Length: 193
Image (cartoon, rainbow, N blue to C red; front, side, top):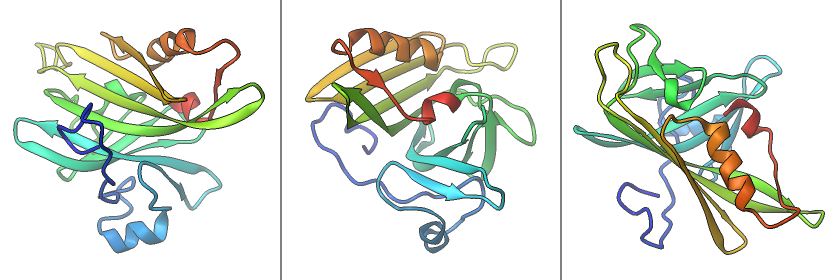
């Protein structure tokens, strides 16, 4: 969704990735490296490891821009590039500039992840909408507040969860408890989130 359209009942195709772990700076290179379907792509690195990439939005006082968030399969590392600066961290709420170590703060990150849900032995595709709000930096340089809101869109319903510390696992646990009996969240993306 584009900035400001959350909850408006409409979905727009996002622009393609502006960067993929710093590997693609332009649209044509991004097209060659990944599947350009909205919201997700799998990039094959030089090794046998793959990287999951989700396009989304970064917003702060200076405006909004399209971004790509990437996690290495099996790894616990998130990467993105915002306004030419590479950020990385062990999870979404702990992104810091690679060169300076300065934590990302005073902004909002928004992205969607495709997520299979198994119910009655059949896998169905769902979408996990993610909204991460990072408050202004405090005295230690860390965000003053970290709010993570997840919404699972599945089977015509929306299952919501919000946590104040940005803990992805806690937020997903709350969604799991709301699902119909026998429903299971799937996908290896949850291992690295």
